[in-house]
Length: 218
Image (cartoon, rainbow, N blue to C red; front, side):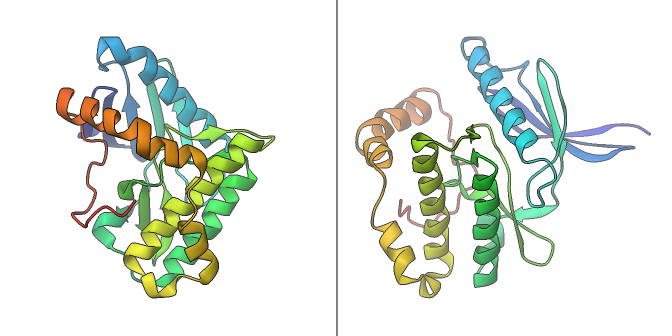
């Protein structure tokens, strides 16, 4: 059977394609076309994704890792709609997403990029799924840094719940939203402004691809 390939994304870190063939559909991350000055970083990010997906093997709601080599990572395709398109208003979706997030953390994986709506999917009949584990942090001992990152994962998920189901937030969840971690506060005040200037103004790269047009409440 002829292999079909469709480009989904191309940026400084390579290409992401949807490939279809005899073995079904899969997502392929190819870093061979990454910008030369950033190719070393593209390889690091790909290895981080492979390590996280390996740790999450068999977990429903996470794409299964098929294989990886020097320049390519292949994972199963999850048939779903990204959050910014699906706009989940059902509180059950967020309960399921919360349960999935706890399962990630139990296995020692912090996603570390759930602020981006395209990284959360609505699959099947309202199930939650997470994709894009390039920035994931794998720490089987779940030390202090891991716990901070896991807390930020939770806050990012609650921010999405606040956007789509604000009336369903519990008092505890509102307290969590009101208390960002120290690294999060430092990122917002010190790192994020020059980061956005470099990536968007200098490099012309928007890392919130597909995010909705709602005002950003982060």
